[in-house]
Structure formats: structure tokens, C-alpha cells
Length: 101
Image (cartoon, rainbow, N blue to C red; front, side):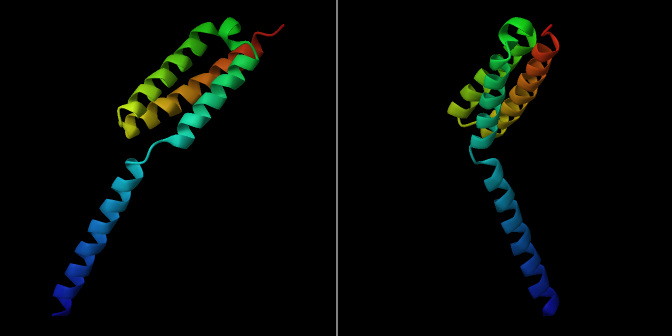
């Protein structure tokens, strides 16, 4: 009897855990989008569009992709693109700073 109750409790706990994880993935990546936009602005402020054009353009393109995915409701893919955009924007910012004489 106890074994059946334990199994039922474990199945319920597992089910709730899966629902919780699915809920995390289904939320819009608001923070990631904001972080990517801020990183792009920071890169712009140090002249990345001129001094680190290829990397800056990659970051901008990734952010545009993230925005399109967000509009399509593809939150997980949008989150990934936004994180990539942030990373590239930070790289562009550093390249621009390194190019300052």
C-alpha cells in the first residue's frame, strides 16, 4: 500500500517538475532582449559601427533575428539569439575600444 502511494507521489512530483520547467521556457526573454539592446548601445557609444563594423553588424543582425523570433512566439530561440547578440555586442565594444589610438 505504501509503495503505491509513494509511486503516485513521485509521479505527481515529476509531472509538476516538468510543468515548471516548461513554464520557464515558455516565458518571453525580456531580460535577455534588454541586455542585448544595452550591449549594442554600449558598443555604439565607443564607435563600434565604425571601428568594429563586422562584429557590430553581426550583433545587430542577431538582435534583429531575436526580435523576429520573439514576435513569432519562439521564446527559446529568441532567448538564444539575444544572448548571442549580447555576446557579439560586447565583443564589438571591446574591439572598438582596442582600436582607439
